[in-house]
Image (cartoon, rainbow over all chains, first blue to last red; front, side, top):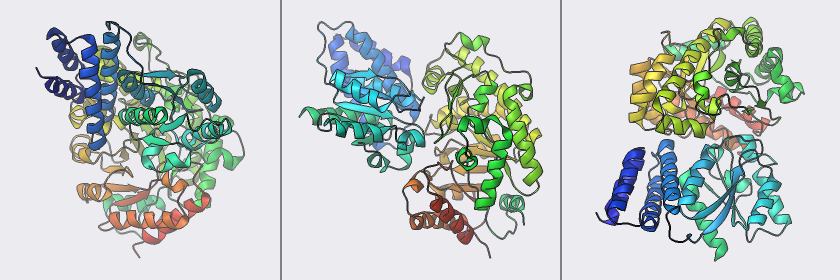
Length: 222
Length: 342
């Protein structure tokens, strides 16, 4: 089977939220002689990138598809990484968490799954995270991006969330080397809200967020 | 006509002086009464008092008996709610921490005997006494397919929902559906006459339409099996659902639809037509930063789409504390002006 056929078959299975069918494509590729490195770099990463474009263009894509894209990609990548002949090169680092006062974790999980499959190291701080924790962790781990998930209006717009992180980045002179990205339901209803809370970028869903974060990492490292 | 009569007229398509105007003011209560959110929500009397004061202040049509959505999780064993003085309370303790807990998880035989129900019944009894004959009293019911997100977290629920084990998923859904049936009956008995049935998994923005038909719909039918549906509102947590409006009419017999600001309202009105009530909803997150003029213009746009032919209600999502009072007043003034049939 040609590489593009594997990618199409894999993504069709993901889009149908059929994990077994997606794993069958991976197993078929392994049986056909693809190495674990090939599976990640020639199947999973291109497939996630194709899916990112598809989801960005298809406004009718749904949360279940976003979840499965991330879940399957992360699972396959994790299994393949164990079999790599040498550790892969890490593209960059992101510190991620839910805003202070926010206990929602689904969006964060989708973003993390996609990022891991793209060889981006993720430092997950969890939920209900203070602004200082985000900034301290980003400095400690030399992360290029801080990603904050907020599912409620008060955690998206409140003084202890993204606004405070921006203030700290400014105070500590870190704005040139750490970018701030936000996501979550309130931003979908007001696409300009991200700028009002001091973020550099936002994304309407978890899969697109991974794409935005990857671009910000490239920007910082350029 | 009273607001309740105006609502009934909109549903039936009979003459009325104006369209119904719903304004959902839940977060404003603690500040209005000058107390922390935790204290405010501890007593049904406080919630009722704030709802009545807000009604008097703004002159909209509806009151809410809703304390916070996590109240349902409390009735099912949740012991910790994270209160915020500037927003919505969060469930902070998941009843189901691992899959083994599903077998041990039980729905109370009578939720009205649960201590957490007392505040609901106290609130409802005051609202019923004060405005029950004149105003719609709204209550909130989370559907069985969404309730588990409050019991185990949305990410773990999504994983169980999509990837199984499916016997455990269905066991949890059955228990949640049993709860929903009880919850609806208890709210009706307490005096609620508008039940907002919150079913995000009934939106194609959550799962595919195919999955809604094959998996979500049967559970929604089970939730609502008691039969009467005239007081139910189909609501998907502000997610669009135009694609399933016909399905909901045909399979659930629900006739009132709370349309997301992200959906095509014109298409929704066309689909619903005179078969039911279209609720056009303003984007109250944009209202945080809009001017009063922008707010008025958006109200006019929504009502211009929905009012012709009647069968239309103007409404809000949950108006956050961050929305300036001037914009709430501008919205309601404009809704009365443009929503008039005179």
